[in-house]
Amino acid sequence: MLGVEFIQKKRIILDKSFNFIHMRISLELLQILDAIDRHGSFTAAAAALHRVPSALSHAVSKLEDDLDLRLFDRQGRKATLNEAGRTLLDDGRQLLRAAGELERRVQRIAKGWEAELRIAVDAIIPIERLFPLLERFYATACSTRIRLAAEVLGGSWDALATGRADLVIGAPGDMPARSGISSRKIGRSQLVFVVAPNHPLAAHPGPIPASELHRHRAVVIADTSQELTARTIGLLDGQDSLRVPDMQSKAKAQIASLGIGSLPHWLADPEIAAGRLLPLELAEPRPALDLSIAWRNRQVGKGLAWFLEALADPAVIATVTRGI
Image (cartoon, rainbow, N blue to C red; front, top):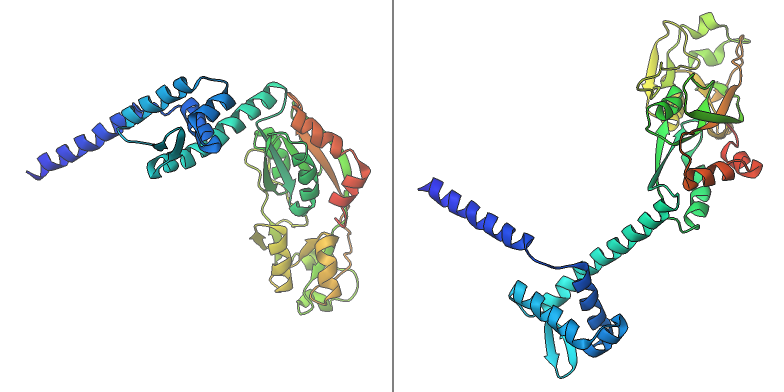
């Protein structure tokens, strides 16, 4: 008996779903309801839509018959939405806005603007430094959606090679031998080696040799490469390591004396000034790291072209790379 009741309930649900699917609430009908609500009458709405009042009345009456309910309270020529009509229009206006936005996006895409532009930023650059650039981009009124992502070391190049990003900013080191990728240098990063004041290395006299570094745990950010060979900076073969997700976590771990490592100046200098980190000299100083912007060059849309042009401005690059 329970099985029969269950089947009957499922049949009722399916019947309701079937009826809903066959409702004909079109965007045109939603536009008619919107016009009537805004202008207060069928006659005024018809004039605004360049149609005759009888056409609007017929369309609304058919919709009411299809839904088996009334949408308007009518008093003479004045028509006011009732509760059911108000609910339909309020939700329907969201569909109208979405449809309008979709139409504009399609038009922009047809003119060369990407539907979405994926920008990866290497961990060595604070992602908030791109916000003024994004503000300028949004001011162009284009409909391209921006998706920001953080990558680490080889992960920046890997994001381009695997199609996770269209543009990367701050990609470190040399570009891999892959076709379809272009790049240009934007600066060099000279990291500063730091430890917590209570770390054993803080008392080491003179420049620190690699043999001494090897005895201590390094705090490193995990490379985000998925296909390309992962890269490391400052990690010696066989050295113990603590892997953290981002640059801020790395600084905090070193402040907590959980390990040693190098940080960009924008992050290290305030901690050094506050006495929470201590800069040390290495016997074998690490070379500065080249940084680049890189992009997929097989099809450059207008959005990507806009960013490439903006990032060619020395003032913009100076802001993005300050203190790295």
